[in-house]
Length: 328
Image (spheres, rainbow, N blue to C red):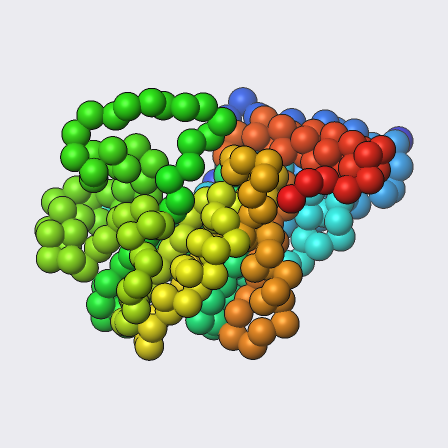
């Protein structure tokens, strides 16, 4: 049994890193098969081998650094630190701190929580068109909306336009009552939710009435030229080839586009090919167009979401090997 001792800066730091009833430090103990004990600000890490102890120390030091930079230490934060230590990339976490994308209507700072999210935000700021592709819960749409709101409030653009294809997720909803807007609103609800959080309902309604915010199905984009706008296409995996080309060619002067999607959740009929998959191939070498690929490590929802994404990736990978290539 080997051990090392490290000293933290304050009891507040120890409390933050260990968590209520040692909930957070137990994650580190389980991940690296070590025992972590504290006496005041002195923390002892003991284990059967030096590698596990070293990894546990790096995880603790990473979390301490985040605490010192004002980050909130949560279960998701600890799990992410553990995964980055296992990859030998814990040093990259420092780059995340200090990047406040937007402040929500309630005063909550919206920040990237993973290295992948940070790279995504930087790509959007730098490039005219950015593709964000990855599994559910990686913040693809949420961060894009936050950046759009920031650009709008700083008068970099005059309009925010959010759109998505009106494709049902494997089920037929049948007849929906109301006018055309009422019929398409259920498809656009996730976009409304994000905008409500950033603006508040009153400011959102006011800007929507003025035409400064537009939330509409993709079919509404045909024939338009979108100048001075921040345009987000959500659920782009459900666009056809023709729809994707139509959308991309709407780009006007002084505008940005963000296209988000998850190519593992395509709801198109089998006879239709995804426009997102084709666009990623066609545009991969075009200047001023960036592509960010998220992984399960970038999932910031419940831990089980990350586990589910990983399990499906492994299953589909083995199925692909057995059957050759996937359709689409």
